[in-house]
Image 1: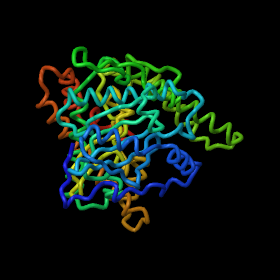
Image 2: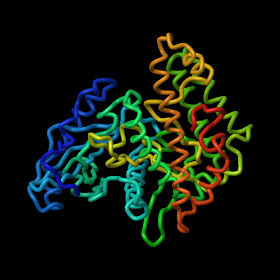
Image 3: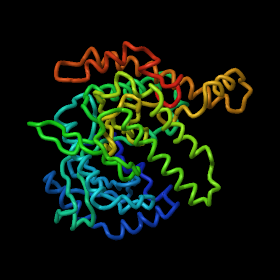
Image 4: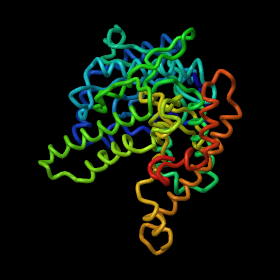
Length: 405
């Protein structure tokens, strides 16, 4: 647990509560949630853990599935109460209480795995988890966790667009970002799936993907090959696009359906995914390490990576350029804009292009360092050598730089 210094601002001083949630019934969902949550029960539990009187924040920080409250005791110890929100309005019919509980249990198992196995990745320690059968959860009004707090805020909240920052600051951010990804990837598994259980004796158990039902996968895994995994992704995206087209009365964007169809064709009929690494080993990946899930201080030092609910073992091709510098245009379109400084899009495209190049270089350095630091307990030694030795075309690019690093 962290002890507050007088100069440090508590995270909730930047939390925005209901702001930004007034769409698609999301604000009403939060209001219903707040009306039923017993915050005093959270305080009681935190006081038992710390042995001191605890105060709870009025502001809160909401996400798509969880809502966070800040708990601070008299000594400055900071905890975060992470409380499960009601069913998401956009959840599909396949998502039920059982699948949601499985996803939560996978995240808990993943945090236990991190705590026992990985030293170079900052993350919030799990102090307590109260599931749906717990009396404490019943007292609070929802499933919740009490996790370690940090005196910082998300990178997204501190600086929404890092591409506008000075180059040296961007380099500092990206070096940390890529190093953590490489550290996670040093742990590999024989199949693609989520960590459903962890024990010190047996290690991590890879089971079916916890996001499979939410993402409308027709198969839940674990998957034994990259092709099988990406084929399931393609089918799910195609199904989603077709459903959305039906909801639009058949007037939907044809390209939203064409994209998944072409992707499936690429997976099934080319060697792009069906190469030497098709059958693994598969790298451990956070899968959602965007700026919204990176906690930083005012100097952009990484304090913690949060929200591990989507973490899984995955093929190396899942690595991609994250927001706020995703690769969403063709190389030709970008090249044409960069040749014309008078183009209205030039400043933004140029900044994003430069940041992507910086990210690519940092990723290569991070992978190289990870190889040198691996020891005999990491199955990933061979995997990293393969990635590094095959060069940019294999390690940090896909189809000439589209979508993947």
